[in-house]
Amino acid sequence: MAVRPVLRPGAVVLRRDARHLQVGTTPAVVVRDEPGSAAVLRHADGVRTADELAQIAVRAGSSRGAALVAELLARGALVVAPVGGRRPRVDLRHDAGGARFADVFRALAAEDAVFEECPQALVVTVTVGEPARAAFQAMRDHRIAHLPVVLIDDRVRVGPLVFPGHTPCLDCFDLQQSAGDPHWLALVPQFGRSRPARVGAGASAVGLAAAEAARAVEELRIDTPPRLVGRSVLFGQAPRLESTVGFQHRCGCHLLAA
Ligand SMILES: [Zn+2]
Image (cartoon, rainbow, N blue to C red; front, side, top):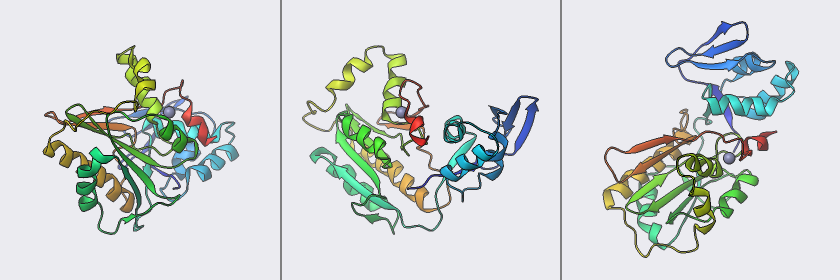
């Protein structure tokens, strides 16, 4: 699925000082005015792909076109625009405990969503308990867009929605978690080895999470940037808890775009 970046809706590009540009004012996203930055921001119209923008950056003198575009996306100066009017393709995979989520998600997903296995589909995975990371690393490395849904303890976590090379991945999420919990990375290799015996999340949490995932599919269809890019949302407690997920340099997934 080609990523088509667009300037943050409603934002304009301003010059902040001799070395920096600024996208929008409320809030402002400040970016370094390096060769190619202005050209990418000027040409990011939601029609050109990230690869085309990277080439534009290189023609404008950048030595790191793809990384520059990925960085502008990660910083929020650009957002991912889907192609309007396209039928979203969804490859839904769930374990036994994820069946109820899957049923609600199917019912709520865009009316014209096509559920099928195909290389261009968004893979939505639903697991009870934290899933083993290998499958997600494989999808990332093969540049398959994916959305992890995890029923964990009495909650449901949705996101981040990953467009490999262009938006932060699940490894980025883990590295970010480890900043708050130094032992998190010791837990990660154990994920998926044993599964909880039953789903702890209540029906309302499952339903709200399914609606969030369904909205992501709808956003792929209409001309709206997916909110779950670089973000995970936790349901099962009030209020719902949203966290941003940024590129982690130790992960290096943003280099996929290079
Ligand atoms: Zn990553």
